Length: 254
Image (tube, rainbow, N blue to C red):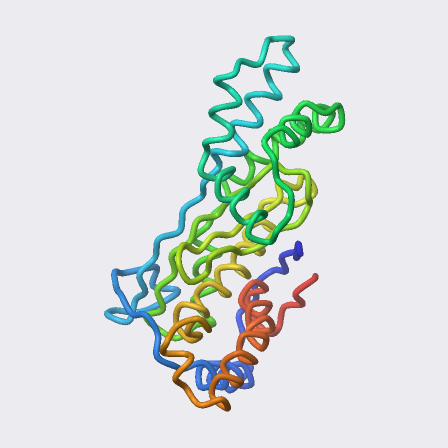
């Protein structure tokens, strides 16, 4: 869900340190620890986290190429469709939809790309894609790390995608973490960074604190511990809101 970005303020309220300590205590469970240095604002010295955050726009770029050809009255070649359907973003989007037993066929997507509705939005989509490409993902990473245990490793790919459904979501958190964001012209760069920070916190929380429920490690824990871990994931939604906003003194929707 898109969240507007509030201006960050210098926090001198002691309640913040108490709240922050509470969050760390609540989630300080065994996690994945790898390391190379990050921004000093997010971590210090040897406690720095391993980061691998990549913006992957190949699906959106391929759709935009077809839209530009259509607008110019040029023929769309079979190779253009083959390229679109083989992009990493499209392949993983299709995998996700099919994993949920939802219909997702290349021919249906072809009709969507050639629709008059999408053609009318081509210019706005192109401008939004270029704006998002210039967004500062470091800001999003630093905000997520501020509300995660030190040395948390975050690796994720962020896919801005042009697709029929307007939802955004995370996918394959335990194996190949991905954030899919519907390319929305109404979302500016600041809101984009805000949303990425929120989702990166979910990915970092899953990596550092919440073992996958299908692993033997999770299954061998007492039922009470499994229940706490599962509920902690829901509590993490509130912490992700704090991370995306930049602190408890900033309204998450301001």
